[in-house]
Image 1: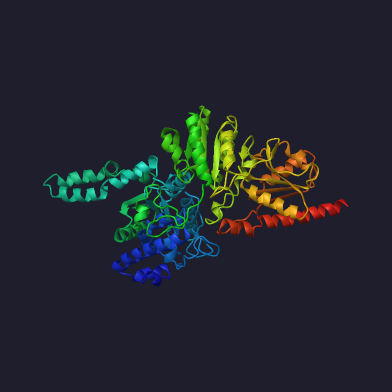
Image 2 (image 1 turned 90 degrees about the vertical axis):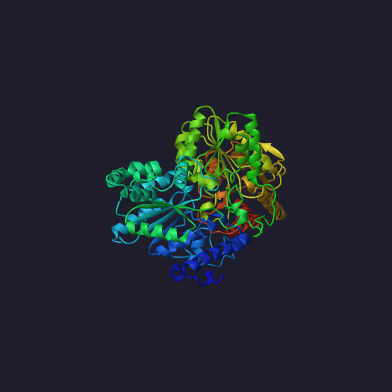
Length: 629
């Protein structure tokens, strides 16, 4: 790593020769494979942008020139070139974030790790530069072809193109993939650009050939040049961009430093909005990634650097349980269709797509469109299942409310990675869904506690044809089955005490069940008896819950969701509405953005562990008993 260790900031790149730059690129790839394999992270995307990132930092002057990344998971090379080369704790507590982080460096301008937002940021930054008189400061937005399928990107393009004198350089990092291969009309358009000879080269050849033609040559060339727009669309149909008013440069080999620097230099000097279309290879230079058809090692756990194989294997995860049950449902019901927003494999819809390709729809990174398209499917008698990360459903709340719920449509939303997810940081914790969805009239929300309940509640969800249903579950390995010992209303009783003797009612939400049973054990050791129930469906609140609460001294709710507006708040309101005046304590995630760390570390920090909860419940019971004396 002789060259990489000499890079402490972007301007150190200026002193390197072309040969040294090529060597640096290989050093960076070696470093990424060695280091990311130890910690896990987004390996494939970063291997694909090595030369592109070097070229960006050679041509533009960060942080004076703002360089932005969408979605940010391809910023590892950017971190290396801006003085952050300790990857030993990548995505771990106290270590580097897996995304841009303003706390880490002045070179990290935005922390977006939700896709398709970078062009909106770029538009605002460019407008601010113009108003402040900074006319010589271009804003550079790096966006993948996958993120370019999002509606926000095109809304921003519409605005960016409107100002011919605001320098915004849009670098399209076109690797034909988001997680998996990019689909849709835009993908087809970019594919055409990739595989067609550029019209500029054609015109250059035509000029030389025609001007050598006696008498009519020059006249023909001038006519040809006057028809440039039509010829351009015929030879390389980038007209979609230029019709918006955006200068188009490309396609460029995204691994050719000389070509990249030349294109970016032209773009910088243009003085207005320009698109630089770069062709890159996800996973480039790492054999295991290049040969992985599923996602080119988009994100990996801890792996063996030579083989790319996982170091450890884990048990069955929540996603695979959903995947199996979804296929079973598909065989039983022809009306069930699957929808994904460019995450077919991560959310577990790939097996369904293999079995029922005609009933699977990948809409690209477009959650809002996915929900409204699902509404259309449901209107015509089908039952769509939209599988999406919990944090990404936030982006489509209005569509859930107004396009599905208002019309009383049977659409099922399956939320993967709900609750604390940890290593990907604040933007990826699925801690908002049970709060924002509480306000949706008619919506029903299930939080299964184990694999058996996931299967059962998914089946219950798709039986509902007059309202939206939601099934949400955690990230990672699913634990052992948690059996019920009884049923009260629609709630499963997980732990009961002799009638009239239980002091505490613990309302356990989803995967919190094992922890809640542990809390009950700790309370029992202190002489406090508890009933533990799993509502199964947490919205609406089960009608039997207020009556059960009235039989206890204290009610406790435990959820892997933000406390504000969550299940605890809904239960509290239900008790008030029923006139049940019992002290209630809600345990959940505080309403703050949580730094990256492991799930267990975060739960410990926020006090969402059995010992911490038992301690507080004991104190509450003691105070309640004292108040009654």
